[in-house]
Image (cartoon, rainbow, N blue to C red; front, side, top):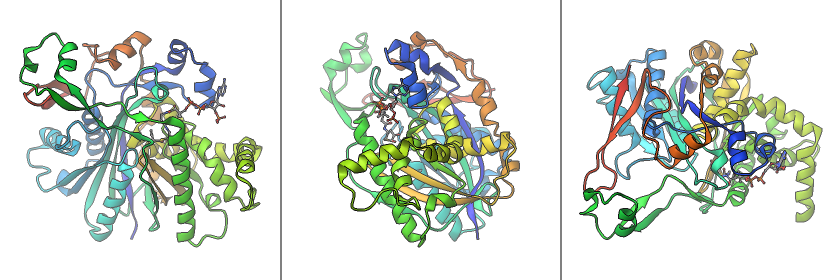
Length: 453
Ligand SMILES: CC(=O)CC(=O)SCCNC(=O)CCNC(=O)[C@H](O)C(C)(C)COP(=O)(O)OP(=O)(O)OC[C@H]1O[C@@H](n2cnc3c(N)ncnc32)[C@H](O)[C@@H]1OP(=O)(O)O
C-alpha cells in the first residue's frame, strides 16, 4: 500500500522587503545576496501575523480547498521551532481555531502535538504520520509546518529571514507523492544554531518599558525566550554538509544501490535556509557519488577541498543544478527561510514549476535531503503520483507570491523591533492575532486570534 501527501497548501507573510534594499542599507554588495546566495525577496510577518496565524491559515486553506471532513482526521502533527509557549503547543491553538470555524467538537477525538528539532521537525512529523497511516490505512493525518525565521538586525542571518507555513494531508493512496520505505538518518549533538533561554533581570525589563505597573510583581530574575537564534553560520554549513552526506550514503547502503544514487532522482528537494544552500552543499555528494569517481578515497584533505571547489564550478555540475535543484529554489528566492516548512515549500515550488510549464512528472522519483540544526539529517525518496496535477489546481503558488506587498526599509525595521502598531496590509479571509493578554506572573500571556472575513 502507498502512503504519502494527498493535498498541500501554504500561507506566507505576504509583505516583503526587496533583498537589494536590505543589501544597500547594510552596505553589502547586492550581487552577493542575489547571485551568490540566490535571494530576491525577504518576507516578514505583518503586525497581525505569527506562527499560529500562518499555520491556521495554511490549515484552513487545506480543509476548504480539499473539502476535508474534520471528523476523518485522526492526527494534526505540527513541525515548528517557533513555539510561543513552553507547555501549550501550537497544535493546541490550531485545534481551537479550526473548531471555531468548522464546528465545535469537530476535532474532539483528534491527536495533536508539536515536533521540535529545528528545521527538521516537520519531516519528523511527516515520517511519524506516514507510519501511522501505514498501520491504519483508512485513517488520515495532517502535518502542519509553521515558523518565523527571525534573526538579529545586522547579523549574518538577517538576509535569510522569512515566514510562513505549509500544511499537508497524509493518506493511503495519495494523489501527489508516495514515499518509499527506506529512510536514512544521521545525528550528532552540536551547537551550530540554537535558541537558548536567557536570564534577564527585572531592572532590565523595566528599563525598557514605561514603568508599566504590570511589571511590579515580577521576580528579580526571569528566564525569557528570544525568537532570534544564537548561531555560527559557517559551522552550521559544515554540520549541514556532514549530516546530509552521512545520511545520503547510509541511504545508498540501505537501498543496496551500486550506481550513482542522485541519477535515479528526477528532482532533488533539500532543506533551503536560503535559495542556493542546496547547490552550495551538494557538490561534495555529487563529486563523491559520481560514476567517474572524481574524488579518490585516498586524496589528501587539502586537495580534497580544492577538488570539491573544482567540481562545484564544473559545467556538468551547473547543468545538474539547473535540471535537478533549481525548480525547488524558485519559491525560496521569493520567500526566504521557512525553517520547518522550507523543504516542503521546495517540493511545492518544484511541482508548481512543472505544473506552470506543463511538464509531466508522474512516475518520476524525487530525492529529499532534510536538515535540522543541532543536528540531524534524513534522506528519503518518493514517487510522484498520476493525479498530482489535479491536486495542485487550487494551490497557485507563484500567482500568490506575485501579489506580495513591498515594504520599505524603515517599515521593515519597525516591524522587526515590534514598534509598528498598524498592519501594513488589510487582512481579508484569514486568521489574525487579535490580542495578547498580559497575566502576572507570565511575561507574555494568553494569545487570542480571530477570523477576518
Ligand atoms: C538555519 C537553518 O535553517 C538550518 C540550516 O540549514 S544551518 C545551515 C545554514 N545556516 C544558516 O542559514 C544560518 C544563518 N545564515 C548565515 O549565517 C549566513 O547567511 C550564511 C552562513 C548562510 C552565509 O554566510 P555569508 O558569509 O553571508 O556568505 P558566504 O558563505 O561567504 O557565501 C557568499 C556566496 O556569495 C558569493 N559572492 C560574494 N560576492 C559575490 C558577488 N559580488 N557576486 C556573486 N557572488 C558573490 C560567494 O562567492 C559565496 O558563494 P560560493 O561560496 O558558493 O562561491
